[in-house]
Image (cartoon, rainbow, N blue to C red; front, side):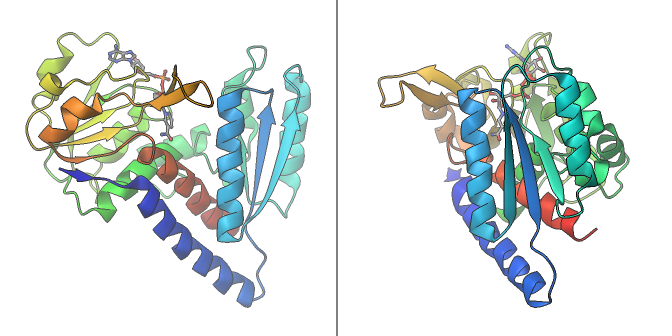
Length: 288
Ligand code: NAD
């Protein structure tokens, strides 16, 4: 069993991006600039935004964080997005999700200029991605594909079972992995909360991607020998630690890992690669 080390891979890619930024600035071009908007004070969201700001600094990007209170009106948020859309110094914009209940997330996503939508959530980018056209691919799916590619994991002709059909992970991943591309060319099965006998599908998989947000859902008896297992889940569960919680994945690691050819840990697997995808997309946006 080999660990797919997302942290080490992400560190390596950060060096590559930093070298590209150096080259750009040496040619007199401006540094890529990522803006983030955080509404409210959700603990997990603050942590994610903090990681993104730190990663920007590590590769030499400029970053701007706009913090807004939880009672910010949708109208005000949309007007701030419009300002950033119009700012030529800012290349990429992310609005940290989830948003407070009174704000319509879809309207927010659709207000971001598709050319600055480095999260790849805007329908224009999703549509282009589905058609296999150049686009900003959403961060977590891109990070997973990049991690598999860097470890030389063959996807062509393999059966990939994805658990979870969300718009940000399961569905774009299913689409990308089924495309005629590398990595891709997979036969894909999507399982979800209404799937009956889910284990029947996972036992026939070469690659299992668990993205459902149910801690330690995938047990040892659901995984065939030699499978590649990617654990996307991150759930804060109560624990006797300094913070009062620990991060749990969707995979029962101690049972599943001995059966795998490759497996991602939580933390240190998919999470760091998701941030890299944002950096890559911002670099791409800066070159537009
Ligand atoms: P979501 O809640 O939007 O969707 C969950 C999906 O899982 C749904 O499609 C649902 O049908 C399916 N599901 C739920 N319970 C199920 C069950 N018992 N059996 C089968 N399917 C079931 O979730 P999401 O936004 O895609 O996130 C999933 C997990 O991935 C969460 O833990 C989230 O925190 C994590 N996540 C991690 C990263 C990262 O960078 N590592 C990025 C995004 C999401």
